[in-house]
Image (tube, rainbow, N blue to C red; front, side):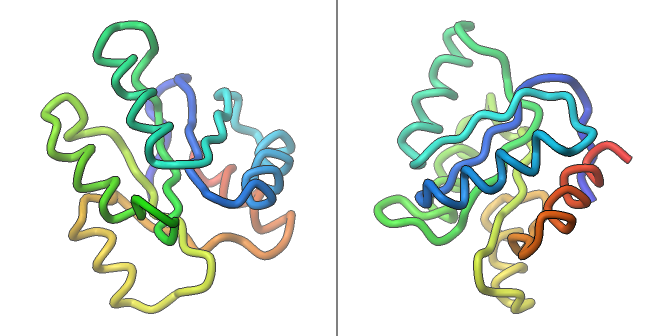
Length: 135
């Protein structure tokens, strides 16, 4: 499991506003003190990372990336980010809404994710997931 290495921001990229709000709500109840930044698309993530390269923003501590998004999906986003030498070691956790299939998990790792997580179904599960990043 991935552990946070610094107090920098945690970004969650998900095309579902509801999923982002749920995650943000339970993140706030977790022990994690990092700032949570929700984003609705891979394009938003690319803009943020461009600002990192321009020294306008800090390198995030972690990116939680929904794999199933319209337009640029999580695999494509991982490929693009990993192609930039500046972001080779940036930690990513691939987030899955419906799949816990080993083949899907392995595919995410091949595309550059450091780990994977099926989105928790309950509040306590979400809080436990976030807490696991520091415990």
